[in-house]
Amino acid sequence: SLGPKWMPWSGRAFQFQIAHPTSILFLGILDYDELTIQPHDPISKIEIYPSDYEADTVYHLTYPLYLANNNNNNTNEITTTPPNSNNNNKATIQLRLRVHWNNPLKTVSALSFGQPPRFFVNSHTEKEWSTIRYLTRGAEYDEQNSMNCMKLYVKELVGNHWRHTCLLLDILFEILLWRGTYSFQIPVVPSFLFMKKEEEEKKKKKMVSIWFPQHSIILFGFLTLGMEYPELLPALIPASIAYGLLCNNHYYSTHPSPWHRVRSFRRFTTSSSSSSSTRRPGVSIEPGTGSAEAQRLELLDEYRMNRTTGFLYECCMIALRIYKVYNTSLPIDISTVKSN
Image (cartoon, helix red, strand yellow):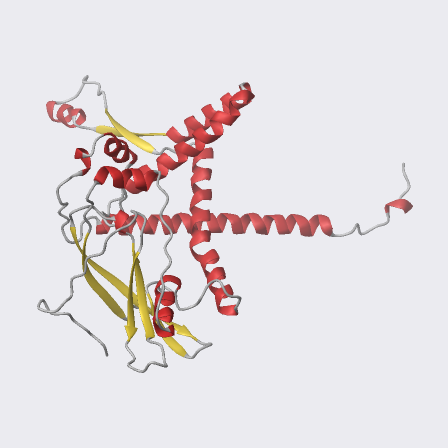
């Protein structure tokens, strides 16, 4: 069992210069091997994106690690993603992180319009090269042709891409069915005739929530303009893409969990105009803030994915039944049938 800890008097704090806001901080755990021939045995690695964290805020991060069995190499590798929902985490990585931007205005402009620079990392020995490749590429090199790489690609397509596809289809179905997306409350106007004073007070405090299909109305407006004025299609298509991106940004910027929340588009616009607005004080996050709401939101997304999967399965079964009915040949020869 391994449980390394770095005491306060040891050199456990590191400071890295960030070349671009989209730069990635790679943190790896390896079994150090003193021999110069054998490479260091990789245990696990994580990727940290500094642009996802608030500036001048101290984060206490804990990453769970899961055990993934590799049958081909007969080794056990610990990864940060669970291979299935039944496996419990085998270990954790705990660290403290703080991000500081020297010029927030340049940071926002580089994050929005600047291209990240390209770096070449050189190493003296093959052992160092294997360690760097593991941190940046993973245990399985994804640019070489092998069956393990093919399994990784299939797992990625079946996992994340299928989940996102189901959620996107569910959103499209809700828009086409004019489901409400935003709600507002209005007071109920009671009739005070033949009511007592207690009932009147209860009725005055009653509010009714009304759901408004904003996305459906905007889509209907875009389609109407596109059909009536086809010359506006080159402008309506980019506008619809921009509206979808704004809706996606609004969804993630209002996430109940501060760990999954991203910067809103309004904050980007205000940051581009003045650098003083981005210099905000450190954000204080209490333990467990928004965890219950985030779990309920994950369960809702899981339900929506299962609902879309079931709908697609039923559509495929109906299509197969129709194909089975119309694919069979006629039981009689119509050429021999006499007309009346």
